[in-house]
Image 1 (cartoon, rainbow, N blue to C red):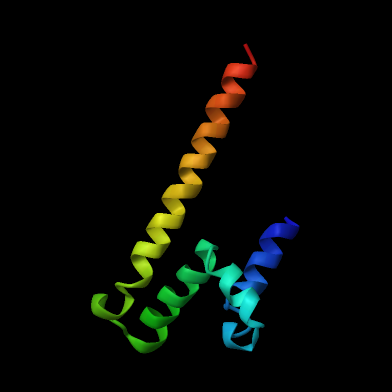
Image 2 (cartoon, one colour; image 1 turned 90 degrees about the vertical axis):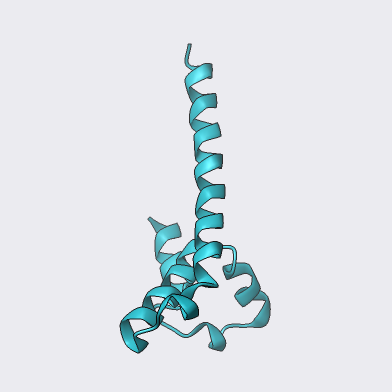
Length: 83
């Protein structure tokens, strides 16, 4: 739970990412929540179309696929060690 709270606070949903130090902005680019917040705010607040949010979607899908692959490997490893 503490990890989720920290990710939510640093994602840009409650405070703008521009007010964060540069090194923290770079670290948070590895988090899918940052890209999701930017994508959803663009659509909800500005009515952005696919041409504008198109650069956030590949990042969001790529990071999500990487996390999914890591979770799948850990799950398979836990199944094999349980036998």
